[in-house]
Each structure stands twice: as structure tokens, then as C-alpha cells.
Image (cartoon, rainbow, N blue to C red; front, side, top):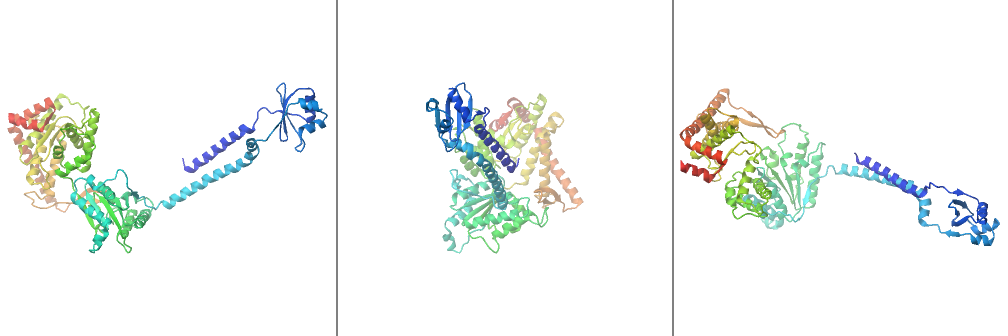
Length: 604
């Protein structure tokens, strides 16, 4: 329902309520009989009158039988004088119970003033609501092009750099900006200028927004924040208008910081995608470029922005003079992960057996957001067990929940499927254990989690940024270990290895086309990924090679996959007793931890 319709309905309801209240005072269902003064004299003489009440010119008569009557007298003459003129004696007049009442303010208001003011009052109420509605519509129209930036003020939940673990280089860069704002003379004496823009780049969950909140907590200057998507609307020119309004507000508060989260929503490269040259997003970006470094540069306004897609940003936005600094946030290493876990464990009662270093070892590739979610899941699991402290088991199980999803306890496999799953996961674990360049096995389980019927958790012993060709080849053999184990044991294969086959084929193709690790085709990159900016994702690959080369790529991929399959087959066949032992242990216990898994090979 529209606001104007609501106001009209409210006004009508008000009229009905006031009318009902007024009618309760003015309407009388028992209207008394009106008599003349002569008739009143006769009734007094006949002694049938019980009492007489006089209010102004109105005379109310109550007879002894309860009958009500009314009469009227002259306003300038008293009732006693009028009755004596009609022949009533003084003794008869004295016998009559005559009372003179003062006209009350309440009855006068309800009887005289309210009926006159009520229509005027209702018109005023209706006019008030209509004017207010029109003013609200005008205000919305005028504020449509204004920025929605919120200013962060000092609150109890203020975040500082002490609350951000890891990202040492990023914090140093941002601390320098904060110091520049607090003590500009220190830098200006040396001819240094205030940076105009700081771009935070990194994978999702690495702490870009958290660092921006820390800057807001550290800086003693106004801090405005908003999302890049808040600029663009369906109406042409609104985004550019909001940019102008944002920087106008920022100039008045200078020195200050403006933080734009997910700037790729408006900062994508111009001249690509759909929309033409008059695309609203491009006009918004043009206005941002002008405001950051145009004919009227902003003095004392630092623009911070965050994105996980720096590759799609417009080159004009990235040049010096606009975003002078680019701060890259990587996934945390083992020491940073341990520090992040300590921060998120501050308000959680940990049991004495909790070893955060061990948790950090088992979480390579986890971002800061993943680690926060991990500790939160551990606390939830503890509460669900009605315990008071978070144990090491709670934390370790939560790692698997974050990686793979919750346990599917309702998913019950029959005996044959359980046997196949046990041999499948045993094949992965066995091949991983036997190959020197494969990651160590930390856990094997046939308990369903997420979409997986079972899983083999293998983690690197240390963080690595560079990967060798031998590591990829061993990983491919591990991926195919489950497939080969099924085929060698049951002389048949199932759909359980479909995801392993897809990943193995993808790794083999990347070795050939992206990493130049093919012995036949040599150190070359084949194919260029083209991206539709409008959709924001890769949708096709541009082939820069001939059909003959494509055939050679397919043959090389096939060669790599066949080689990995042969490696896995040799291990499965030569270590058949170990495969059976691992499978039987899985069927009995469903889960094997790292220590118990390594102990199985001591037995054999």
C-alpha cells in the first residue's frame, strides 16, 4: 500500500472516531417533553414536581413519577419572577425545589465550540498529512543523487592493527598512511606528498576489509566507507552525482579517508562488454577518475579501495596519481595462521590439549576468514556437546567440516558400496604414502562429508609457493589411485572416481598448455583466456595454435595421464597386502588418523 493511501485512510479513521466521541455527548435517545411555563405553574400547584434545574435559559423539570420535561425562560428574567407573573404564590414557589446550575466549560465546549471547530480541525489534519507526504517525496528526489557513504566513528568495537594478525607488509604500508595523516609536517618537510589512493588486492577472505576497518580505528581522521555497487543505479547520471557528493563531503572533512569496497563493481575496464560508451558504470568511473586526479585535485583526501579482481580494473584507475600504492594480501603462511588462530581463540575457552600450531599445520591454503570460521565451528560443536571448553578434537573435526562440509550421518551405504569406498580411499592413501613427492597423509575416512562418499586428507609438510613437475606427476598418480584400486580389486569401476578423473585430466592439460612442462611440446603456453567483462568470468579460450598442435596437446595429455595411471597400478599391485590392510582397518574403524596410518606400514 502506498504511503499517501495510508495517510488518507488514517485521516478517515480519525474523522469517524471523533464523530463517535462527539455523538456520545450530543445525542440523546430519550428526548424529554417540552412544556410551557403555564403548564409548569399548574404542575407546581398540583405538587407533582420533584425538582427544577436551571442552566442559562434552559429549564429541566423532573416530576415525582420520574418523567423528564424541559422548558425555556427569558434570558434576562429569572424563573421565579416569571412563575410569580403566571400567578404562583411565594409559598408555592418556596415549596418547589429549584436549583440554578452554572454552565460548565466542558459542556459548553462540547455543545458549542467543538461542533464549530471539528470540520476545521479535520481539514487541518488532512492537509498536514498531504503536505508532509509531498515534502517526503521531494526530499527523496533531491537526495537520490547524494552519496550513501557512512562515517565510522569511535565505537566500543573499534578494530586496530593489533586485532589483525599476519599481513606484516600490508600493515606497514597502511601504518605509514595513518602516520602521514597524524603528522603530515614530518613528511612535507622532506617534500613528500600525501598518497592519493591505496588499493588493497588479494584473494577473498584475506582481510582487505578488516585492514580497512583497522585503518579507521587507528586514524584520528574521518573515515567514510561504502561499496562500489552503491554508486550505480538504473537512472543515468546518478552514479556520477553520488561520486561528486562523496568527494564534496570528503573535502569538507579533509584530511580524511574514503574506503570503497569491491571497487571492481564500477572500476572495470572501459570500452568492453555491453552498454556502449554511455554506460552508466563507465560514467561513474569517469567521475571517480576526475575526482581523484583532475584539474581540481583533492588535497588531504586518501581513497582506499579493495578488490579481488585487479586484472579487470581500468588502467587509468591503476596509474600513479590515482592509486599510488598497491597493497597485496596473500594467503597466510603457517606462522601467520597460528597468529590468526590465537586472535580468534581469545574469547573461546580452550582445553589444555589444544595445540594451535598443529591446527596451523593442518590448514594450508586457509584464508583468515576460513580460520575464523574454523574456530567458530569448533565453538559451535563444543556447545552442541554441552561442554564448557573447546577441545583439540573439536578443532580438528571442524577443519574437515570447513573443507568438505558436515558429516552426512543419514547417508547409509550398503555393504558392497562401503567395501568399494574403503578400497578406493585406501588406494589414494597407499599411493600417496609410497610416492616421495606426494603430500603426507593425515587422515583417511569412509564417512560421507558433503558430496564425497569418503576422503583422504593429505597436507604438505610446509608451505610452498613453487611446485615442481615431479610433484604434479605424483599428485596425478595419487588422484588415480582410487580408480586403479577399484579396477584391480573388483575388476570393475564405479562413478566414484569421476571427480578424480576430471582433476587429473585438468592438471595434465595445465602442465602442457600453461606451465610448459611437456617434454614434447616444450616451454610454450597454448591458448589465451578471453573474458567477458559483462559476465565477470572466463567463458572461452582463444586458440592461438593450429589443429596439428591441438592434436599434439591431446596426445601429450593422454601420455601424462597414462603414465600416472601406470605408476599407481604398479604400486597397487606390488603393495596389495598393504592395500588390503588399510581397507580392512577402514571397514572396521571408518577413520584412520596419521599416526595409526603410519603404524600400519610398520606391521607390514
